Amino acid sequence: MSADAPLLEVRNLKKHYPIQRGIFGGEVGRIRAVDGVSFSVERGETLGLVGESGCGKSTAATTMLRLEEPTDGDVLFDGVDITEYDDRELKRFRRRAQMIFQDPTSSFDPRMSIGESVAEPLRIHGMSDGNRRRAIVKDLLERVGMSGDDIDRYPHEFSGGQKQRIALARALSVNPDLIVADEPASALDVSIQADILQLISDLQEEFGLGVVFISHDLGVIRDIADNVAVMYLGEIVETGPTEQVFDSPQHPYTRALIDSIPSPNPRERGMAVELTGDVPSPANPPSGCRFHTRCPEVIQPEGYDFEQSAWRSVMNFRTKVTTRQIDLDGIREFVIAETDVTDPEDVTHDQMVDAIRSDFDIPDTLSDPEAESVLSDALERVVRDEFDEASASLAEAFETVCATDSPDMVRTEAGHSASCHLHDQSVEVEPGERIAQSDD
Ligand code: SF4
Image (cartoon, rainbow, N blue to C red; front, side):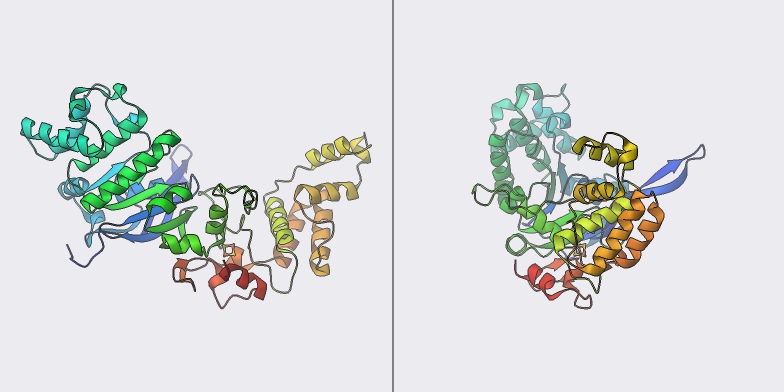
C-alpha cells in the first residue's frame, strides 16, 4: 500500500471474449468488450463512466473488481495490483470494494429477510456475534433512509427504490473504501431516481468513499461525478473534470452525447447533432478511430473540400458499399413505388443512382467537382452490381486519416484529454474544422 497512490488506478485494462467455432471450439475471433482503458479514482471522488449501452462500461466495472478475470492490464488498489491477488487477498479486497447493480430485485434472495441480506457480508467476513450484526444492520438501514424496524421484513415488501437503498446499506456494511455503482437508478421510477442519486452523494461524503458511477445518462453523470470518462466501443475517448468536459467537450462523440441530453428549453430542442450509422460490433471494430463510421466531424481526405454533412453521407455510402449492404432490388422497388414505372426492367440507371443518393442523403451534386466525379463513378458501378470495383475506387480516392490511423489520447487546449485526430497538430485538417472543435 502506498500513501500517495490513488485509491483505484486502472491501466490499459482489457477484457476480450473469445468467439469459438467448430467441433474443437477453435478461436475464430474476439469480442473486444473492453480494449485498453485507463483511469484513476481518488478517495472521496466520483468518477462517471459514461457511454451508450454496449460500449463496455459494465464489463469494465466487473473486470476491474475481478468479478471477471481481465484479459490484460493492471488494476492497482492503494498502489497494489489486484490482478496478482490470490483467493485470500481477493476476499479482503472484495470487502473494501463493493458493487451496486442496476436491478435491486435480483440482488436479494427472496427467502432471506433484509436484515439477513444486509448482514451477510459481515458474516462472510468473520463477524460471528449475531447481536452486534443486528445492531449494525439497524443503524445502516437508518442511514440509508429506512427504518431499523424493517430488519425482519422480506424483499417483496419493498419498492424498487427502497430495495436500492437496502442494497446500499448492504454494500456499506463492510465499511468499504470504493463503491462501483452500475446504473443504480436507471431501473427505478424517475421520481425515485433523484433520491437514490442524492443518497449515494451523501453517503460518499459521509464515508469519504471513492465511487465509480456507471451510466448511459450524461445528465445524471453531470449531476453526480467529479470527473468523467467517456467510453466508445471498448475505449475511453475523452476524460477530465466533469464541468470542463461538459463546458468544452473535445471529442465529437462527447459532443454528440451532450447534444442529445433533452433540453427543457423548447428553442434548443431539435438542434442536436444526430449520430448516423450503426454502432459497430466489438467483435469487428472499425480500423483507425473506432468512431469514424459515425463521426459527424470525420476528417476529409487531403485535396477535397466540400460540405461536412455531405462528406459524412459519402462515408456512410462508402461503408455500405464495402460491406455490400446496398439492396439493389429494394432500391428498384422504391423507384417503382415512387414513380410511374411499373416494370423493374424499365427502371433506369439514373433513377437508381438518384434513389441511392436520396437514401444516403447525398446532395444531387457535390460542391467539389473531383469528389463528385469519383462518387458518380462509384454510384454507376454499384448500380451495375460491381461492388468490389466501387469499393476500391472509393477507398483510394476518399482515404481519411480517421479510418487508417488510431488517434492517441492527448491533452487538449481545454486542459483535459481526448483521443481525436482533430487535436493532433501533425494531422492536416481544413482550418475551419479545427476551429470548430476548439470553439465549443
Ligand atoms: S479521429 Fe476522426 S473520426 Fe475519430 S472522432 Fe476525431 S474526427 Fe471523428
